[in-house]
Length: 152
Image (cartoon, rainbow, N blue to C red):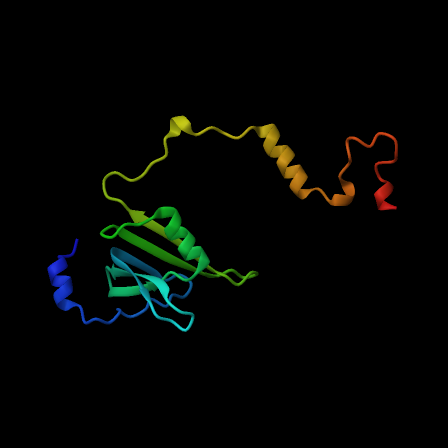
């Protein structure tokens, strides 16, 4: 972990260079701080990571996927954070990222005793309901008529 006094002495008052990832790029290092920074869209959330190879970089948390990963993992200042850019989704156009946090010797693990598998029958029913064509769904309470009447 960096020494706070040394970091403050070296601070120029400017943000470190922005990380501008392309597909396959990785930034990995100590999370130094969170902040906001001005942009053409107004104030945006950023974090500064002291990358192990290139030094401090500003990571803009303005991608929905990246921000969702940070919200899910909640990295803390001082932890080692790694981000890999998987590029833009080929059909939908959004940027894809994977974030991982090295939490030291005690990584967060699930309480396996509290995790239960979903009911298989309910999963199949939910899947059928989501994927069946509306024209092919049968109304259970309509016993009088032809269930395929809507298709004609």
